[in-house]
Image (cartoon, rainbow, N blue to C red; front, side, top):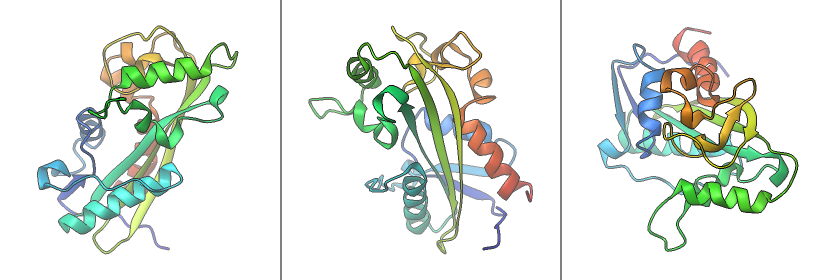
Length: 205
């Protein structure tokens, strides 16, 4: 299948995550004239029924592209913990669901990881990000990026979002939660995926 370059002037980010949207906007700065979110268009989040990061990213991007009639970019990301057999993986956001059903709390999610890992000696983990750029006609371009590191407790830092405060990338001594956004953006799983997507769809790759 021929790779399709992005040539539109408006892109919809298929997310309601208030932490994720500015990260994506920063990574696409200067490449897309107008960026809006699914929430801006009143488009709800579809149920994520895929069995992989890539499947869920494509599902979300296709859904929003069809609903808005505009190209849409979705990501599906999470943390895969070696000592937990790769969990929480694609269920990373679901692990953050509060027991009382009132929303997501990633402090709760990080505590679940700590409790389930227990005294397991392997604290290795990797953040994974699948990015899918889809058009209203159903065509998608999808890539996947990752960064490896170690988990630490207690959580450190108030920057970033999600599991950032317990993840120390290999070769560093601070968590993503302790890093300024520009430093994190330069190395993150999302940045890795974006480099691949930009080379493929925004620079002719």
